Image 1 (cartoon, one colour):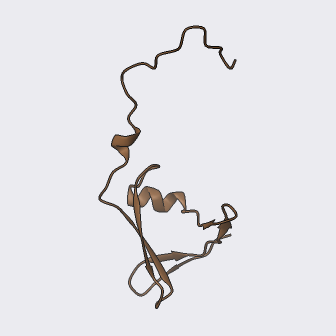
Image 2 (image 1 turned 60 degrees about the vertical axis):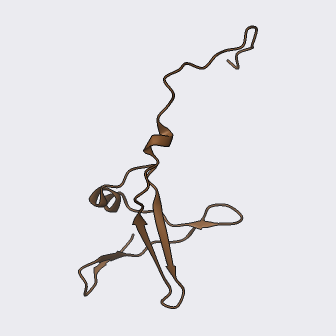
Length: 87
């Protein structure tokens, strides 16, 4: 179970484990309560700032939005005549 603590600056810290994501990368999951409190959503673009001297990573919500990229086209996709369905 993750343990929470309050820093002198008032920030809440929580222990999380690095998880193997693929052969080439690791990931850290973010707790739902953090995402909810920061008003972040799936698909939001985040910026990662790495300070190697301090050994810290800071993740901030980017001013860029990926919401426009996710909106589907209103034009229906054309299906080729005689194309076989996968179902």
